[in-house]
Every structure is written in structure tokens, then in C-alpha cells.
Amino acid sequence: MNDFQIAPSILSANFACLGEEVDNVLKSGADIVHFDVMDNHYVPNLTIGPLVCEALRKHGVTADIDVHLMVKPVDRIVPDFAAAGATYITFHPEASEHVDRTLQLIRAEGCKSGLVFNPATPLSYLDFVMDKIDMILIMSVNPGFGGQSFIPAAMDKLRECHRRIKASGYNIRLEIDGGVKADNIREVAETGCDTFVAGSGIFGKAVASDPHRYDTILRAFRDELAKVKR
Ligand code: DX5
Ligand code: ZN
Image (cartoon, rainbow, N blue to C red; front, side):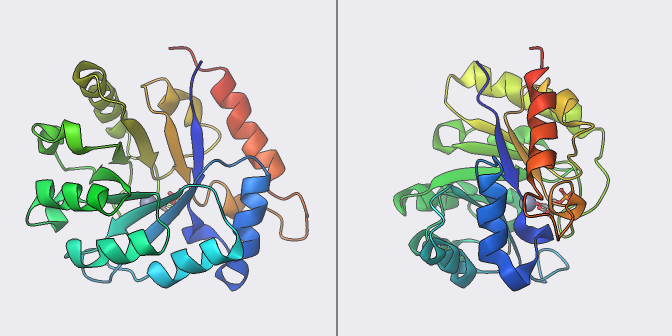
């Protein structure tokens, strides 16, 4: 039995009614909330911080919140996100001076930890830290913006990563982020990936006047995942 999780990236949601957007997408069958944090320094865009994460919790969101930090430095902001209700906190190894220390900090703050790999970042950052990781996130676009096209080299990287996870014996989720749509999710899942971020593929496809706007899209994702052969 595959344990697939769909993680809508709220970067593509309507920020003017974010709580409602998150409620609707979870009601339509999404599993976790992907929360993109950009600082206009590590990446050339600026988004949302711990206050918004906390606001979603206060609004009543109980699903896991998967905080993807695209910020540099990393450590200063980790306790703030833990206090704001983050479940996962993942970061880019190039953005931390001390990757092992940051991974330990995330767990010490009570969250699940993860490393994020840009398209050109080698997986060797994993070599000595598999015991401190709960999630590996493979970027299939360069970080900073939603709506970009899937970079095909991510497929081999996912397969290699899956192999490393199996060999380690640890329980580590394998997540993909960037350009995931209903028409490629099945192929992505067949690499061993189990957690699927989709921003424009979910929020960008909905008709605002339709009260069940995310049902059809999430159903299409699930139908594709049901066909996965491993
Ligand atoms: C990009 C972000 C992604 C982004 C994905 O830096 O990390 O989470 O929202 O958007 P789509 O699914 O539109 O490629
Ligand atoms: Zn992301």
C-alpha cells in the first residue's frame, strides 16, 4: 500500500482569503500544506513568514504544515516557525553554514527536519546526516517562483534518492516540488517519490466561482496515483 501525500503549495493560492483556500483544498482531499518561505536574498522573491503559519493554526488548520525555507541564514528563523506550528521544516543545505547543526536544531524544536536539493545540488549532502532527516525534498524547478516547467533530470535524482533512503533503513519521506501536474504525477511517483507539491497545478486550475473547485483536480491526481506500479 503506497502512502502518497498531496501537498498543495499555497504560493499559488489567493492570499486575500488564505484560510478559506486552505480549508477548501484540504476538504477536497489534500493531505498536507506546503508553505513556501522566500526572503529576497537566498531566492529573488519575498513571501510569507511565521505570522502567517500561526494565523493558519489559529484559523483551525490541523493538517501538517510543511515549511519550505528558501532563506539565508536559516537557524535564526527555525524556532519562530516551530512556535508558529510548523510540522516539517526543510531548508537548502547551501543556505546553512552548519547543515548538521540546523537539522539537529529543527528536531530539538519539536519539528520534523528535511533537506532540499536544487536542480544542480548534488545528493552528497546526505552522506553523513541520514539519521537526522525526516524528509528529502527534490526541486524540479529552480526555487523562487511557482508556475515553472518540470526539469526532467529530477527523475533520476528521485530514483537515486529513493535508493539511498531504502539502503539507510530510515523512515524518510521523498518529496518533489515544481511543475507537478496531473499529467506527470504518475511517472514521478513511479520513481519512489511519495509526497507531491503542486501549486499552479492545483490553485491555478480552479474556477473561482465553483464551490467544489479543488475536488476535480485532486481527484485527477488521486486517479493517476492509483495507477502507479512499483
Ligand atoms: C518554488 C516553490 C514551489 C512552488 C511550486 O520555489 O518551492 O513550492 O510553489 O509551484 P508549481 O507547482 O506551480 O511549480
Ligand atoms: Zn516549495
